[in-house]
Image (cartoon, rainbow, N blue to C red; front, side, top):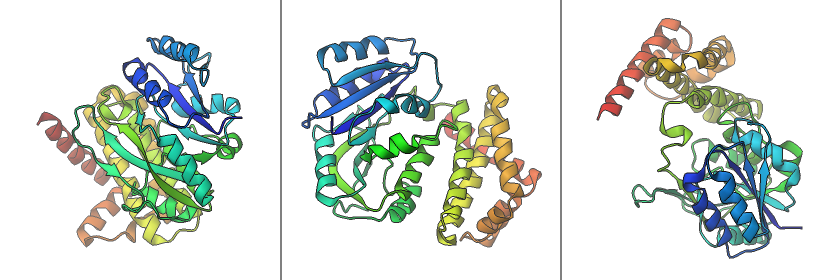
Length: 333
């Protein structure tokens, strides 16, 4: 039995996949497996993975058979194949320090934590914009409860990338309702933890892949409001107070406005507009959401404008048009 299963969903990732696999093969810790889950790629991804699998038995090539359409579905497809005590999840373009898995495992054994988080560096090959998330506000010795980690994750004070118990994957799997369902899933994972710890291994989160879903207008970005709405409900249903759910209500509304602005600037995406409309209608119909939004801190003017946008079509569309205008200005610079 291996100690750690690395889940690596792949779809047309040939541009960076070689670097990712090499980074995994160079880990100091050796007792791991890499499940490379090919969701019917049409580029050279399969050839790259097969070459690594032939050279190193820790790498396994798994083909989904039919295009599942999301990383979460690909991970769930391969979950039964994972044999580790713990698992980690990575995108097909990320990189890792040589001691990444070693430090995650050592800290888990040292602390008995359910989840261990590495440092995260927002990586660009040209060396620019190397923002980092280190421990909990810089403190790697911190030990958080699962609920505290959940709250910290809402504004990405801590990352979602972690070493998790394999039971989280096998028993629950990943939500697969949309392109950003993994962000919802890791928050659920945090709520299932008793103890969350940190280590100084490094996960390099690539920022310069122009093919990534967040780098250009795409239908997947329209899933963000729905994910945020689901998270707001999870916050409320988990018993957190207004100091947690109220700011997130504002975040959810603003995400919905930005998604509507994306549609205004990209009419080719209008066939996917229904999910944005359904989310706004859900916000509008929820008295609990309206109350949560009203409790948000800020100026009376801002609260009034956003309150109107959450209730009235005209105000919602007006703020969306303003957001679309500024997005065009930013893109033109």
